[in-house]
Length: 493
Image (cartoon, rainbow, N blue to C red; front, side):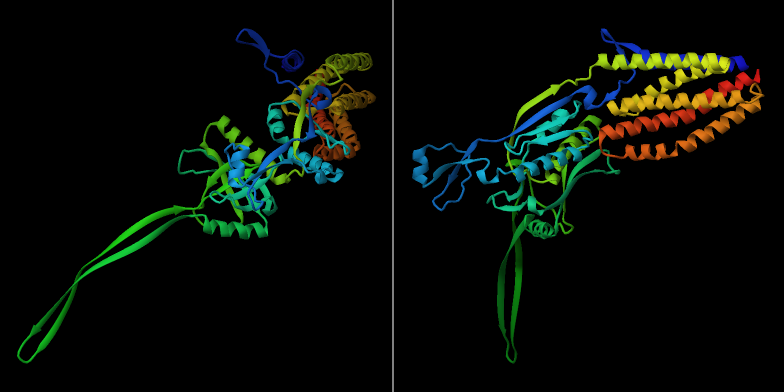
């Protein structure tokens, strides 16, 4: 029975090691693919998308009437047609010279950084040239990179206008915050609806209430009444009676439906045109993004669209209009070859340590080496399946974890060997218990620091924290279940 337990553990360790270091391959179409998840690498290891934003230097033609008011028209008019209508055409720069300041360059950088944060980008680098205004952004290369870039230079000029007169009713100054919400109707099977929730400030809330009272679907009703009146006079000898009868009083109702609508725009691009069903008194406007759906892909598209708009509006309007002049993926300077060399070096050091274990602690050392290999293999799988972003600091965390585990195993084996009855089960149990208590008491300050690092919104630090967190957790749990069990079984023989 004891041999079966040992053999089972060794076979399990071999399987975990094979999966971790060599993978599990299955045929997909005409090729073999590894089904084991790959590592999530940080920008310093995996490379990054480099995006350079340059100040827009173009101009836009603006048509004005005789009073100097801007005229909106989709019609292309010649100079003669403009003159006939009393219009003039001016070419105005998209960025006035007075707004091209170092202060606005820095503000633009902060707004773009805030947009990335709002869309869940934990790792990015952003810098600005205060002379030219150029902004360089580095973000990880993944499935959402293109979506992020498509909105990165959006000015974010929000307007709520009268659909007919084009009068601006509300703008960015009225917005307090914007976020994404979800809702579903349990009584129907329509699925989940994604909402863009725009919350307005105090002044904006008052405007919204007035607008929602004005831009509603109204019904004007006109009542028309026609009357036919018959009067009958009847004379008798002593009595004169006058009877007046009114009948056939008919009322007809003529209804005319009139609707005042508002249009929502971002950077002159229309989002939607709508009216209000009822007055809005809470200062919150909820706009549905797409239709309700149960399809995961469609739902994710709606969420992505809403999140992009929310990040643009919530971060504020860019004071300067930018163009994307560079959009390129650049590989990291640290190649797979360098990482392979590092892994080989760590492996050689570990091999020397394993030989020392076996020479010094004999059978206990051999069992500990087998268990150690299993821990490293399982550790690398845990890092992959917990979506830890591995950075250079993360690799350092992995190496530190391996060193800590070596020290811990050596502590257990050394404590057991010091005892005169080191081959007895009770002695082994006591040695393991004492080693756990002493080792992890000393590790408390490190554990606290690691937990703090996990919650820091800086990938290079959080990567180290998460790698160390899972490493320390495995050292405690794995060695209790596997290493300690193997040593106990060996002592029972």
